[in-house]
Image (spheres, helix red, strand yellow):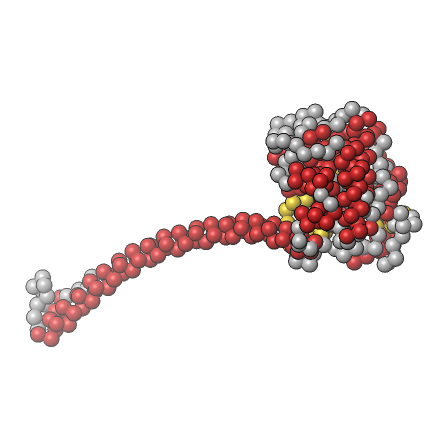
Length: 417
């Protein structure tokens, strides 16, 4: 396949995901859009992932394998982008799953709308519970212009950073846009995708969407970055300071949207920390550096989309670390996330049972109509049977007494109707 025929480059960093890698690669290679290349960059795996990549590369020429010493996902994505040649680029992870039409639908949409970025919806796949849960955070259509496609920050300045999450894997990018803006993943161990994704949305002149859940993010996998985030505790703060610097330098700061996403992201990060030391480091980094530099303050009215954001900000400014941790709650991370899962599952089950109840009600109505019909038929048959039985009784009686039938005829002339 020549360079001109490659429509989409799928760039995939790989680090110790051998358990899931075959399933993920099969999900990519079975895409209905065939004119693709799959750039896999092994980031120093030690579990046999590289051998799996090589075996796929030998079977399918679209798979191209590169290696580097362990330098984390951002550096691997940058290396993959440098080797890619597709007109459009998407950054997928090596343990997730994708709908077979994902690339085709996103590619057709971004080409049709001549957009810089195309965003799609997605689901959480909760591995240990085998749950597939729709997640509005990937694409919130209530914050997308209804009649304006494509759109940009000028169309929805208050929600431009909030209609989609901060992940990179639900976004298809035009190569020329990334090159013109000089966008790359920063050298953080975590939150590098947040910086890249937020800046790409803020800088894009044309954004379009596919309102479908086209990818399935495997959540709960031991060893994923969300479970190692506390190893680099101030990375989230550094990320948002970098974003602030770029946007203010370019004079395109959507402040309300930025503040909401920044607070949401930092709260999400510190909630996922699993040790006191890491929480303490990020807490004081927010209090002493991040919030002062970014001018994060309590605000009146509905400035913040979520009511408790003001309380979170107040606690950072006014509380000590112990009181702040108590504010975050007494539930462990596992219990808190389990509560989230149960809430989402309850909503899903409610809709399922509502549909099931409706179907059962329709069946009951059908059965009721059938019962009425059967009862009518029964009454007709009963009347006919009683009529026949009455005739036979009279006939038998007449034979016994040697009399005439009701019409005065002899028994030999009687005909049963």
